Length: 485
Ligand SMILES: Cc1ncc(COP(=O)(O)O)c(C=O)c1O
Image 1 (tube, helix red, strand yellow):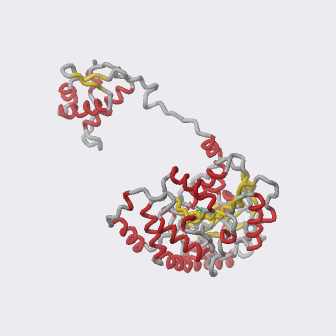
Image 2 (spheres, protein in one colour):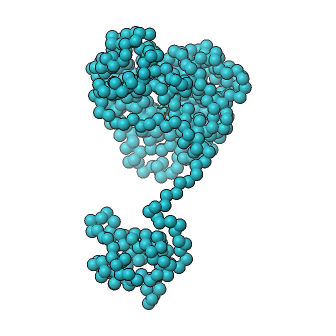
Image 3 (cartoon, rainbow, N blue to C red):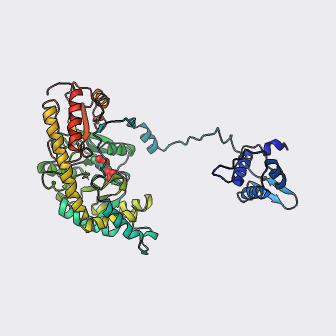
């Protein structure tokens, strides 16, 4: 036995105590075959002396190796590397296993991945799809959370119902009936970790590889990717200023669903009028298809009450309604909800029970109180006021600086605006030039399924004050090529 191999590199300042450093180095030597089965380790006193450390430290390391089965100690004889260890197939450091992916995983890998943009320092960032914390009542939120943290209630020590915290389901059923015209019982309202989770569960339950689904284009790209990962075939319909062109709905058989944003088309804007809604419902009945109604930001309408949900017009269980707190509270909350027709309650509930056993109870309880004690309504009123003013400032700046050179939806709603550029404009060039003058704007192409996508850009206005909006739009006007529609 070479003594040198037992002189270890030890560091008093390491986060791992000395005994663990010895344990780890011996463990590696055993696993890599440098200490074959049956090898006698140096007596603890000797190893301690070789390394200038206390004997007890070595004894501790040997004890840990023995507990885990790497060595056996024989009283009176010493400590030996365990006999029946199979050799590791390759040295730990060089061997990296690449597991085969399932067909689901492979489909996901094939989908185009929107590259993460490099973080740039921008003076004015028209970012969208996030909430902005300046309006959220953190003091109230902290108080509501603390209510459940300071109680000796057993609520947090148990699994909650996978379908959600019942008082939240009740509060939402009342809210949705009054504010969104949704017809449902609290039992039909199921809490999810974001609307995206509801889409995933619905896709698992409803779509087989090859199934056809109508989607909007431009549309919500995370839904596209998800449905495609489940093997669904997307049938995109190009939306106009009123949303889905229902006269273009496919008449041949075999469509399983339509995924739509009727209250506020994402990302183009505009809402589906009553005649289109009724035609869409008739199509779903004739096809035996479901309508997945994504009502992601309908609370944010600045010219009065939002249009009622499509779900309220459905009397035969063809509509699944999806809502989220991501836009009106904050996305990191990861809470959304789904209103299910009776037929899907049991399968949805079984799936939730398997995949994550329900959303976190603590945040659900705080949101339930936030709604039932009136804070949610008050918060929504403040959001509408603040964001409505910002949107107005944005539209006024656009009309002054870029009149006739871009077009966009005039429906006062949401947190962003999609600008349609003249067809001769190059979207990527405009985004780049805007960044060069310190303005962050976002390409519209990822939201289109048709190629080439008509040039467009997305601008969120909710995170900027009026001065920033004015300044950002005038800088933008200088980089958007002058071409009239
Ligand atoms: C159009 C649309 N639908 C659904 C969602 C999903 O929301 P979440 O999973 O955050 O609840 C988003 C989120 O940005 C969205 O923009």
